[in-house]
Every structure is written in C-alpha cells, then in structure tokens.
Image (tube, rainbow, N blue to C red; front, side, top):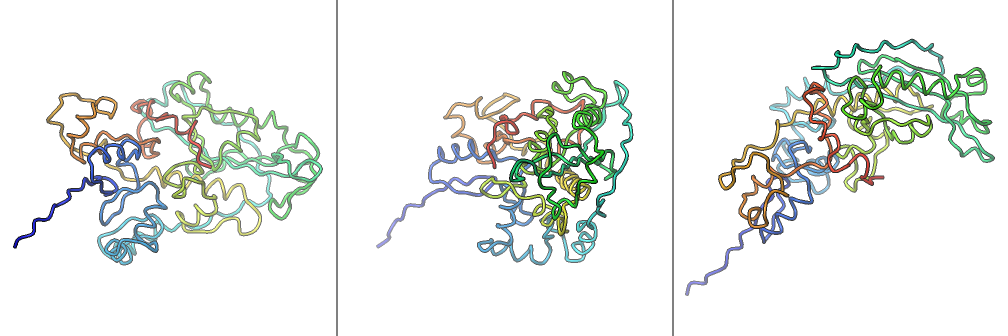
Length: 375
C-alpha cells in the first residue's frame, strides 16, 4: 500500500531566510521588516540581519548556525565581522582592523582657532564632511545631579582637534564629579561663556552656509557625529538639521537586538578593539572614537541599489509595496519582494557619495531619525 503525504511548500524570505506557510504572510513580513542590502550580512550564508548584534549572535552566539560558526571561527574577524578567504588573509586584515586607543588630552586647554568657510560652490561634487563632538558635564543643584556643560571638544575626519574649550557654567557648580571628569574649580574659573561657545560651534558646523540652505539640502554645512547627540545639543542650547546628524546611539545597525542603545564604551571595544573610559572620561578620546565608528560604518561595502531581480509582470521603473496590489505582491518571487523592500533608515555608506548626487529624500526615510523611539 502506498501512502501519499502532502508536501508543505514554504515561502522563504530572500533576506533573513524565515519561512512561511502562506505567501501573504511572507508579503506582510517583507512590508514590516524593511530588509535591504544595507543591512549587516553573514559572509558565509549571506543572511541579512537587523543589526551587527544580530549578526554576531548568528555566527558566534549560543544558538549560532553550526556551519556559519565553524567557518567564522577560522576565517572571521570578531571586530568587523567580515569573513576572509583564508586565515592568512584574516591575519593581514587584523593589523588594520584593530585600532589603538587615542592619546588622552587630559585637562589641557587648547586655544580656539578660527575656522575658514568654504567658497559657495566648493561643496558641489564633493562628499559631505563630518565633525565629531563630545561634551563633559559637571553637577549643579542642591544634590549635584543637574548636568551643567563644562567642556566641549570637536574633531574632524582626520582626528585633528578643531575646537576645544572649557565652558563657564550658568549656575553654581555643586559637584565637579572629579573622579569622572578630572575637572576642578580652577579649570572653569575663566572659561568661555556658553553663548560664545555655541556661536563658535555653529560657525564651524554651518561652515558659512545659511540655516535655510542647510536644512534644505545640507549645502556646505557639515555632518555632526556623536553619541547621544540630543543630550549634546540640549546642553549647548542649540539645534541642528536632523538630516545632518549621525548618532551612533540610535543608528540601527549599531543597536541591541531589542533596538536599545549601546554605550560608547561598548561600541568602541566591540567595533574598534580598544577600551576607553578606564579612568576619567576624556572628551578627545570619545570624539576620536565616535568618529572612527562613523567612518567604519561609512566604509561598509554594500551592493549598489537593490538586488537585480527583473520584473516581467510590470513595466514600471519605480517599484514599492505601495505601487502594487495584493495580488501583484503575492505573484512576486521572494527575490522580487526583496528588491522593492525599503530600509527604514539612511545607511551611512551613502555619505561617501558626492553631495550633489545624493537623493535628499533618503535622509528622511520614514522619519527614522526624528520619530523612531529606540532608547
């Protein structure tokens, strides 16, 4: 007697490989997952992951895939998570991937140097420049818990310090937090007033550009890189265009699997290979470290555009989920669904494109930087 058994066909996501019994469930998954070629990808099985943390769990966590884990153990870099052709190639790579800790600035005062603005057309055809910022706080109020800005440091992409000053607190300091800051009353006695600090930082960031032009398409204004930038801008009592902010605390690939933020100390150790904040917090070290994180994310090699599936059922050149009917979506292959899937954040690798070629709309994908509650 021959027993016929039903074969259940499963619909497999082309990005994360999750399987579904019904095609409409795969379609819903693709709509809400926002998969794209800009997500971290396993160098062994080519699975796309939501974040580097998810990728790390996939290749080396307690429930890691056996094959991927085995290959990664022999030929994978635990810092950048890339997989190389051989252990020899991996060894050569590690010398470049593992960075050394920046020399701390300590409590030295560096005089301010005027910053020269670009000519009006100088930004055309060039990649946007970035500046990293870090601030240091002391305590105010009866219990010393009120954060008061006491120190600011800015560095450029070459890790050159372009601005550093102590800041005169607006109210009396009740706790200098010496164990963390290394600051005393002497450091802040003749410090620069907050208003002057804000004006000088704005001059550096806007780079001679009008506020209106900077908010529209960036113009000559610089990208501002930092960790938890909202707190930095709040303590400076200033604002900056959302599309010009690059915050390592809320950049999805650098976040936890539950989309909570990592500390800068954790990110530096995990993705740069060295420890910071072993004693007092150093604004220069933090500035350089956050700039290195940003540049490492910018250097990610992602496939241009979307995957190359062809559409035989439709002649439209621009495809999104909103352009298609439910029936159209169910008739698409998993690769075609992946092709029209759109990320819900702007990948920093796109900052390496010349500014006049950038699609400004990509900066505000789904309002992620403005509306995404991730902390």
